[in-house]
Image 1 (cartoon, one colour):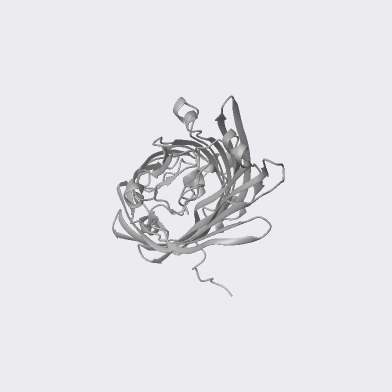
Image 2: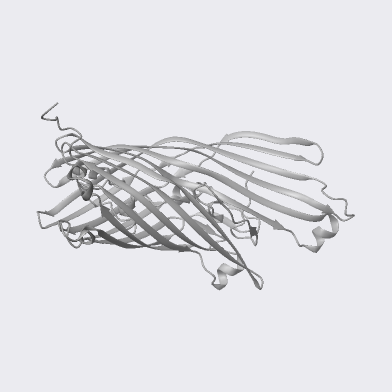
Amino acid sequence: MALLSAVVLPVAVWGQSSSINAFSPYSMYGLGELHTPGTLQSRSMGGVGVAMRHTGVVNLLNPAAYSAVRPHSFLIDFGVEGQNFYDAQKYGDRTLRNSYNSINFRDIAFQLPLAKRLGLGFSLTPYSSVGYRMKQDVEDDQIWGNIGRVQYQWEGDGDVTEVKLGLGWEVFKNFSIGAAAKYYWGDIQRTYRTAVLENITGGGLITDATGVETYSISRFQAQVGIQWSPINNRQRNLTVGAAYDIGGDLSPEVNTTVKTGDVFTSVAGDDTKRLGLKLPQQVTAGVYYQTMRVALGADYTYCDWRSGNSRLVERSAAGFDVTYRNTHSVKLGVEYTPNRNDVRNFLKRWSYRAGVRYGNYAQSFGGVGVDEYAVTLGIGIPLRSLGSVLGASSVNLGVEVGRRGGFDRINEQIGMVRQTYFKFAVGVTLFGDYWFVRPKYD
């Protein structure tokens, strides 16, 4: 059974708050809402980082960066993130609106040396989330006159998590390679319900039909990356980097159940199959320049969604095709630290971050694509005052404001939702060079 969409259909959306990681009509298909990868330091700079090479930052975008970890040290990063979604949709002369709030654990990652110029990295991060709940009362006179009042409801929730384990090796000075295994797992459930709430004689509920699809995902994938620093000295560092995600079949097991009934409920269908859903081949390339005060980064990412998912075409309730398309995104970021070694002014040791991101959404609706963009801000507060043993440890705060879709003439014709979101995140990075040092005294 193909679930019908309300992204391109006038609906009433129920706004509320809970612990799911996303609440968006754009999550109705495929894997749902994709999360921006990277630790909070990277996400506060627009998401750049494939060329970031820093001994005090865990890099989740390129396994080649694992080789940058200092000997006899350990890095661990974790954080939480809150999200606020605000949706608006033109429906005739009205504008329908809703809002939703959530807060969740975001990620945990660590990085440590295995040998000289060889580092290991591990991360547990959310990859995508599904969350929506919508309804529509049909006002068609022909349906109303023959059947009565009919209501359609769409619901979905679930998450896909990414576990990553990789190695980075500095093959020779200033040139590193890396490889990582990725494991994706999670469950997504989508429900579609049609209910006749009131017949033409006013007799109340007659019957309803409910379809439930449950996606169970469990698959391994891989990533490789490189980094090269043509300039690397005590004053400045310039690094170029690239990473390639191999992509491939996810082949989720899909169980579909359809139930119908009024007073008594009966199962009309029950089927289990494999869905031909694929992760895209993804190429990211970037450049990162840093001095003691300033860091500048730029990334470009291309995702080949269409070739792997060209047959995954669904028809919306409004009669529009929903298809995958290839995506492009550009990310720019900057970080400024006035004086990392200032012992008098604590604020001068803070790192101030900003970034922008622009790209397109992985699905089109009725042939209409959706652009999305975001602006990010953040600060890094060093924990050096807690003792030199913490090294480069820090508390990081970040905010992201983004928008997807719009209200131009074509978007209004197909009922496109304009979505504005705000994200607030707190992360902690712990750095220690004492983890592997034997004490002199017992």
